[in-house]
Image (cartoon, rainbow, N blue to C red; front, side, top):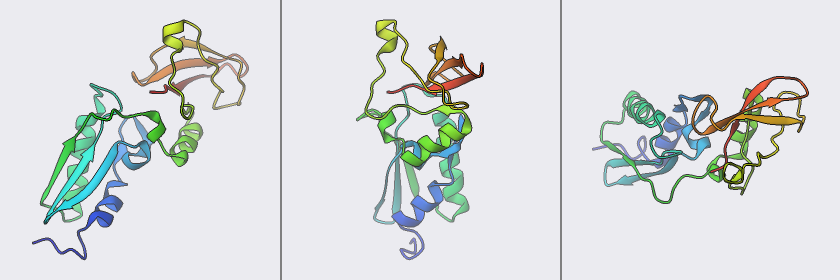
Length: 166
């Protein structure tokens, strides 16, 4: 039987905050909104996660890292469930995570905005995370990962990723 004093939703959440996104190592799965829920079902911990997009290759690593972190913290009775509904949205990324993205050199997504620029062929204006100029241009709809677009700043000439709004 799991000791409820040591193994509860709060302690599990603290452990899971140490699981980082392998594609953006400055962010953890809580900040990214990938971790959807942590709950106890009797003495069994149920961890629910949602991929940032269908087919995200990082999800296998994230699930393995969750299991490793929980085991290291003394958890043995748990399940990790992946749910796709409702689908993940960039609105689930915390404000702190957006700040970290910017400091890391990735332009964060706009809040409450679905980016339809790929459909209209008119790229959106994205502020450079280096010099803060809005004089930027889209180089590719896909950056270092499929969830990011590659931009270049016309002011400081630096390329950078933009986390696409989903």
